[in-house]
Image (tube, rainbow, N blue to C red; front, side):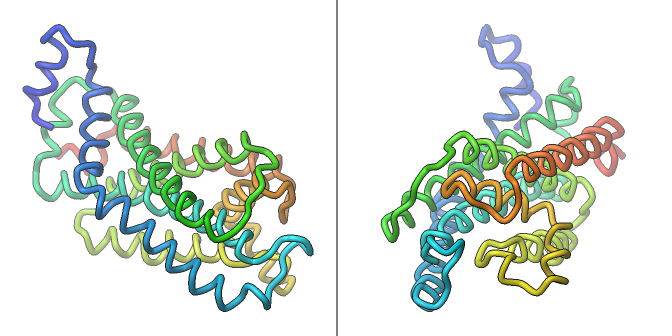
Amino acid sequence: MRADHVGLARAGGGSMTGFSTLFYKEVLRFWKVSFQTVAAPVLTALLYLMIFGHVLEDRVKVYDQINYTSFLVPGLVMMSVLQNAFANSSSSLIQSKITGNLVFVLLPPLSHWEMYGAYVLAAVVRGLAVGLGVFLVTVAFTHLTFAAPLWILGFAFFGAAILGTLGLIAGIWAEKFDQLAAFQNFLIMPATFLAGVFYSIQSLPPLWQAVSHFNPFFYMIDGFRYGFFGVSDVAPTTSLAVVGVTFLILATVALNLLRRGYKLRH
């Protein structure tokens, strides 16, 4: 996004503001390569379902009345939402820093609130788009109920917002792609895979059940799954409280970094 584009948006009689211009640019950035940013993650989730569902369908029962494939689909949807929301904001910021075009975002009079909102909302859009794609493709393999649709939407939105915020923090902190890859490979991926995507934590030994309760990703996935089945490993209100507190903490950190211009303004 060039600085003169922002000026034109403000002075050209249109209703676009700095926030909406940056948001539009971020959405357009991933949508122009949607085959890579949307279709590829959907295919990956489908492969997970075909492999794990085929191998474990007759061997694993969850909550006594839910077959394994039905249990797996919401986990795959939420995993895709989280990972792609993180990828959107983190990759955008690190690319802008390395190529040097971040200056065109910093030059216009954008507040740190506007920058945060644009990057995170664009990450939410990508996360939800991929999640919807995964759901539409995988739902044909099983039968799902919708016990509490508002819980589904709420956890999907806040989960994407949390990972979009975390991606923003990672993009601000990282100075090269290697650092960002380390952040994703050693934090995001393990936390996601160990959050109960492929299993219920009730099947774990007591020690690992206790450890899982310190993983905020677990509450995002467990609360999201509750919206489909009406049952979960922990109370959905507990999951919502943990997700809400996590979002507030990370949003405060990200806004503070943007306000200070940490590793952005030299």
